[in-house]
View: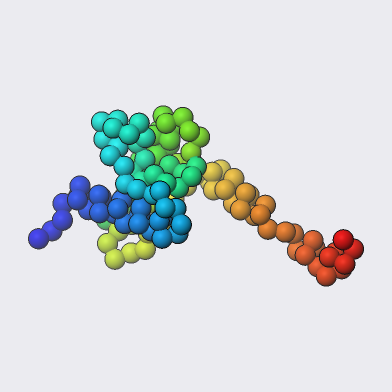
Length: 127
């Protein structure tokens, strides 16, 4: 029996929350985002600073999905980065972000690593 799209989406949201918990984000969970029940329209919460829009469909519509993520992220007023986690059947989960958001995230990631010239034996001896 085929699974309907609402059930498929809910199953994917639960799977994402489980994956996030496996990565150590123990508070990750699917939300009851309909009718403003949580005040947060994220499909999954628990990744700090990330607004999660989850889509498990065969026909990709990234721009409308991203527009929804941006709209919902702005509406919650928390300054979260709008992000779309998406997949189709028998495929890996992909993540889509706006370029500026990704570059800011990458810049923060990169800032956590020492520059190559700061990591040399010579520099360590001088300290």
